[in-house]
Each structure stands twice: as structure tokens, then as C-alpha cells.
Length: 251
Image (cartoon, rainbow, N blue to C red; front, side):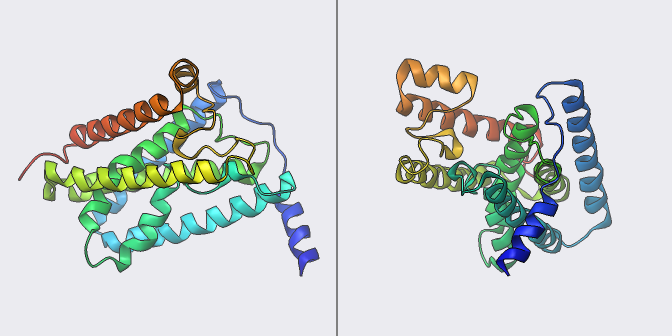
């Protein structure tokens, strides 16, 4: 069985040239992903498909893609990399969508979370793609489709339920983000030694953030100031998305 698994991973580990961030190729691919996300979101919104059904369907797709990513990355690297642990901002929609069909309460909050923080998770990976492009074909496809799905779900929810929301609905979604951020910091502390500082969920906590603006703050003021700045910036950006999308308008 183990031999079959290893052979399967070998077959799936198809090498490719790694796309350079901010190259023409990157910009073209990002544009294709964005256009596809808009078109699919518009299609679902206009057909009146069940919101729970759409979200449940894509939760399965996300789950399968995450399993593929974890298995393939571990295989090609030879050991598990804690930097790949699925608790980044772009990972949280997986858990929200999986729970969504079973929620008796909290769907409104889930909608706003996916609209805003899900949008940020999808868009950020296309804008700052250093960790999104791999020297392996399936991993790169997985990354692009994953973040495209986050954008699509965000846009779909903006189109399909914007008129039924109020400004107050953003507050519990922000609390969900803060809870996820606290868990991210805990993970970063717990895995600091075994990951040799590579574990950096949400770019928060004691490990060095490999992002220009954040590492400049980290070097100058330490991880606490950097983490607070990151949290506040994310909350502000999510609220801007919420407001600009028109979700904040009352009926």
C-alpha cells in the first residue's frame, strides 16, 4: 500500500518551471483567475442556486485540494513542513464552508466572513504570489484554483445576499478572524522549534515574516508590534471590502 502511494505521488509530482512573481506570465494567469471567478460567481448568482448547496459543493473541492497539497508537498520535500500547515487566512474558508451546511446559527456571519476575509485570502495570494507558485504543475494548479474559488465564493455572496445584510453583521465576522488569529499565534509558538522558525500562520507571532513591509516592522519594532499592525490592517482591509461591495447598505 505504501509503495502504491509513493508511486502515485511520484506520478503526480510533475515538474514545471516556477512562475516568477510579477512577471508577464504571473499577471496573465492572475487575470484569467480573476475573470473566471467573476464569471462563475455571476452564473451562480443569476441561476438562483441554493447558497448552502453551492458552498457545500466547493467545500468538498477545497478539502480534496488540501489533501492533495499536503500529501504532495510532504512527498516532494521528504518530510512534513509546518509552514504548510493549513491555518493561513486563505485556509480558514475551508473550515467555514465545511461547517456551513450544518450550521443552525451563524450562517449570516459565515457569509460576511467569506465575502470579506475570504476575498482577502484569495486576492492576496494573487497579488503577493511568492508562496503560490511551485516548481510542480499540480501544486501550482491547486494554488491558483484554490484562491480562485475563494474569490468566486466571495463575489457570489456579494451578489446573492448583499441586500439582506447590515453593518452590524461585520462585527461577529471580525471576531471570527480574531479568534483564528489567536489560534495562529499559538500554533506559531508551539511549532517554533520543530519548524525552525518556518511556521508563520497569518504572518503573526515570533517567527520572521517573509514579506517586505511586515519584516521591516518586525526588524524595527519586534513581533508584537508587527502582529498588531497586521491584524489591524487585515481588519481594516476586510471592512473596506465589506463597505465597497455594498454589503453594508441597509434595505
